[in-house]
Amino acid sequence: MLKKILVLIVILLLSLGNILIFNFKNANKPSIEQSKKQDIQNPYLECLKEPYLSEKTNQKIIDFLNKHEQDSFAIYFEDINNQYNIVKNENQKFYGASLIKLLDATYLIKKALSGEIDLKEEKITYQQRHKKSFSLNMQNYQIGSLINLETLISYAIKTSDNTAHEMLYEYIGYQNLIEYGKTLNIDLTISQTNHYSDLSVTETNTMLKDIYEIISSNTAYSSFLVENMENTYYNSLNFNENKLLHKYGSTDPYFHDIGIYNDEQYPYLISIMTTIGEQPSPNKITEIHQEIRKIYEENLKEKEKYCQQFKE
Image (cartoon, rainbow, N blue to C red; front, side):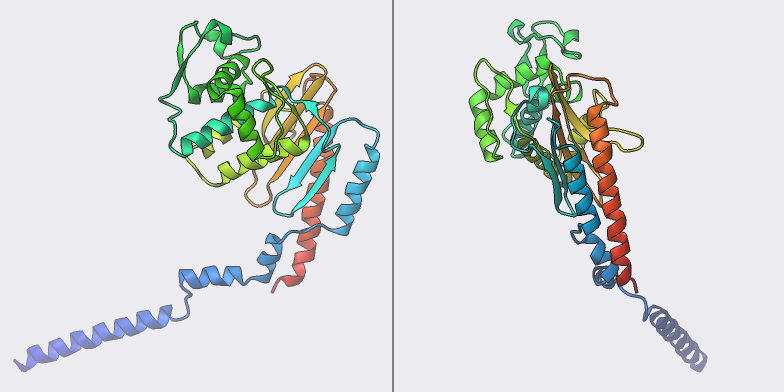
């Protein structure tokens, strides 16, 4: 009996020892919450998250605008996290051509997100009146075909299908689209007979910001928008390894490209509207974007140098 008691005492002492050793080993390890708090209190990381525009970069922006003072293009660049803009002819109206198709998309996507419609289930019958030229996808369908809204939105964005836009435009109703534009401070010049609108780069920047918010919110249609806007169809904003989500608009003499650099840390929006006419990439839009991109990258380098002083 005594032996059994002694054995039990030894077991209890060993167990207690293991608990003490475990607690000692982990005493200095921060919890997940503590680790997050330490990251938040890291002055260097906090500095990198703060808006920043160096004097050197500001001068480069002035030099860029002076260089292009006589050029007729319009530009709206917005560095979202560093909170600075580069704008030129920002309120000048251009015939926007296919850029309005992004409003078709976001109007319906928001209706779907609010539960008012199901983009997969809701379908439109393809009628003869919808048929338009420059319809890369819809040219494969027969009159009378039923196509769901999600497919039509994809066609309208990815290949700028004009027939898809006609079907969506009729489904939405131009007056509803005008009212939707007003909620974004966009003054649409569309009507029952005119299905395309004049736009400024200030307005297209608002459109991009709206899309960026949908994408960043990880909604049911975030990846859908990304997949359709990352196409290379008439993408004049892409160069080298720099790839943007985009939508182009073109009808002679107008040629525009607007897009989102969907970077996790330093995203930006860019709208470039021109009267250069349709051109293969690389073109004037590519050149302008390259100049802006260089300014953007140099500011990030300046920011890194500035924040080094807060490294512990």
